[in-house]
Length: 137
Length: 143
Image (cartoon, rainbow over all chains, first blue to last red; front, top):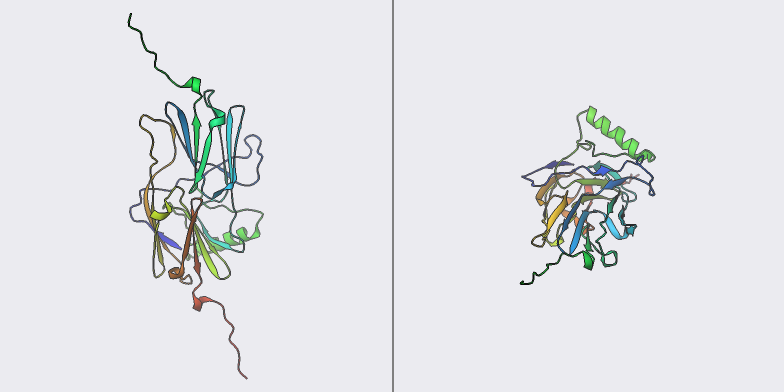
């Protein structure tokens, strides 16, 4: 199988494998650190991450003591098939984030669609910025 | 940079690697060639068909364009920049977006015209049968 490329705007980013010698691991097999985008607005933080090949039932999102852990598993090479060419490595994904105190943990919402996980982390009521009206003196 | 990965415990991977090394030495098949063209793909051979898996998360399935001509297969699509509310500020930006188009030239034994495609969980899977004439057959000997 050979390949040609007419003016692609995207290029391939290498997956970042997680070094199992760094700390304890609770999983088996190859794991990668997925790419993320994080943005915030006045009332929430939104985290978007690429998890290609992860089905909803194989995704774990865990929040404890202010640490959010995402673990997604993928399926292996199709059974009875031999690889003739492999350009990307097949493995799971994991990444950990420390949340700031102002996140309302009960209000977190997660959506997985087309291999993208979107996590909406609302800010707690008290943490929202508010305008203080100045009384005329 | 390494895009290949061989699982040590699986003897198949070692065999495949030997095959690739041999191919490379004789300058033959490009089966082990590494590609930097997006989207990255894995190609598998089964008993009767072939499977091409293309990793392309975040593409609207209705916008994926697949076409074939003889043994060339073109996959095109776009990773659209997500709509972000006004006034939002980014803390991290690691993901990339844009449109892409990639042409795969498949082995002669693959019947690309019979491909069936499915996009699930950000992975496009194309299943293609082996060409009829490439299948093994028994030839009976008449007395």
